[in-house]
Image (tube, rainbow, N blue to C red):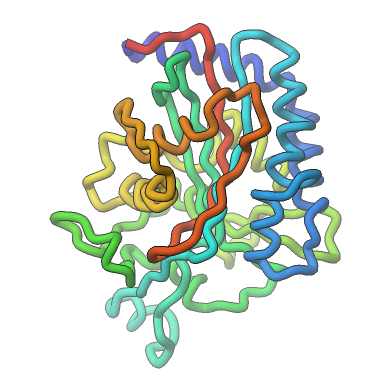
Length: 307
């Protein structure tokens, strides 16, 4: 579709969602607090994605339903995909020699969680998508130096599993630089069981800049957090390739493939089908090299038909 039409459509959505700021910022934090934050990080993430009365299901009840009832043009649905295994990556030698312990393995998980907000038209064609990767922590104490340097310093990394290999770039991927929204693309999620406010902490860790998860959620829904996922860049070995890698692992677990120009994301969006129906709000899978668990905010413009 023409850039002006896309811009106007997104502007109409933004004008509608800002009316729900208080509900979003309030219930975003409660959605995590309703989980048992005494559990280990992967167990907390699974509860957030899959269990009723918390997480994704709670956000649908307290935020999406409210927004959907307030107007007729846009439909919001939260959804989740939980992976029992996460992909491991290796730090590259030139990064390890500069930052970190050269005697350490240099291997860690890519992320505990990816949050993706996607706006689609009436026919579910993707208009815009933004994503953030999170490392989940139980406190403001860094307990994994390899993860810290991966997020805070490294320019590139290499996947361990061969399933992520692509032509030209193999297993290697390039991370965003600081002037390419790295702070918004790679973040830490602080789930402290003694705190009343789950927090998002931006990279680099040393800056100590953070805010409540509810505020992050509002910024994500207003398309001002995360980093743009661009289907046109998925073969370039950079940010959009990394996001596509994660989407691809989740999409592989879905038998019915869909391609409207962004196959991996299209397949996942289509799985959750009617966005006013919250009976199907999560998918759980295991096997393969693993994938990062996903939380999606799917926004549909029910009046717009993209060219």
